[in-house]
Image 1 (cartoon, rainbow, N blue to C red):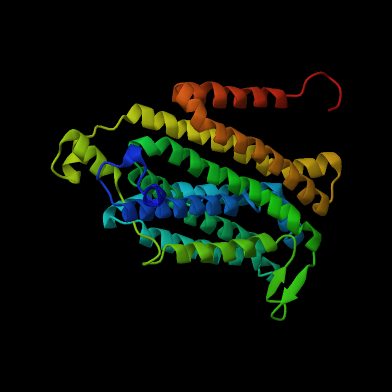
Image 2: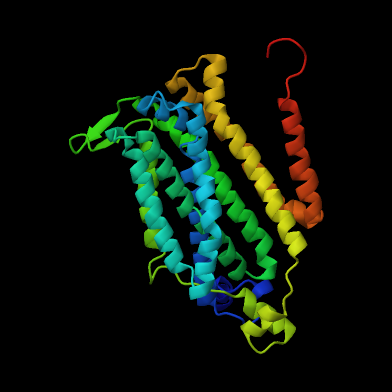
Length: 356
């Protein structure tokens, strides 16, 4: 009886994926690497969202003459850098057959750019352009998202992929939740905050978020070092066995991509991100104009509003996996995603002739 209990408690590969493709240790190592990817996606989302509500008051403090038009350029710099360099990071990763070096370089750049953003309190000449550069570099570093998603597809089996993609999306949403929440949490530091190293480092309600990014990215960098992160690309081997091919290269050559579906999803993702960035970027300056909020109030209340919205999105992502087991995935995308987004935008349209 005792022996049977011990046997039942011995760890083993789940039965649904226990087909001899990998050992228990390889299975564990593979999922450790996937969880590191989750954290990386969380950090990249955090790096984008953590300063969204603070860009306008921070810029207005550093350079009151910059204007909202230039703020739009600063916000656009991040996705522009990501758009330009995502294909390059993907090509680089494919070229060397590994994601480690591209991710280490991108995280090092993310650390530098976040530190640069938080060092703008030193008031260098043309400070608004330095802010623009820092946000562009953060966008360049965020191009590693393409590499992360690619690895996620390669490191998961077909039966695991929907769950893994949902979890990585959940990690991104958590980044959008934690970011504004952290901005709200550091608001009590005020405009002046604390100075260290004879004023070289200023820790206030605008710069604290950047320094938090620096610390977290250093931790993320360490996670990808040799000995801690090991790549496991099991998807090709799984397909190779199912199709009876003799090599992974032969397997990939036999696969014919569905370009129509791929581009449809790319455009859909563009629409989603466009809507998110547009509304969240204008939110702080819009509420300051409409409600006469101070910088402190705008950061505090917008952080709360964005966090509440992200919590709703979090619940939605948690529901994706069970919903996709009941309904076809494209129905979930259309009726559970885009239809609600369209309805939300319709409700933004002013109704009637009275003031809001």
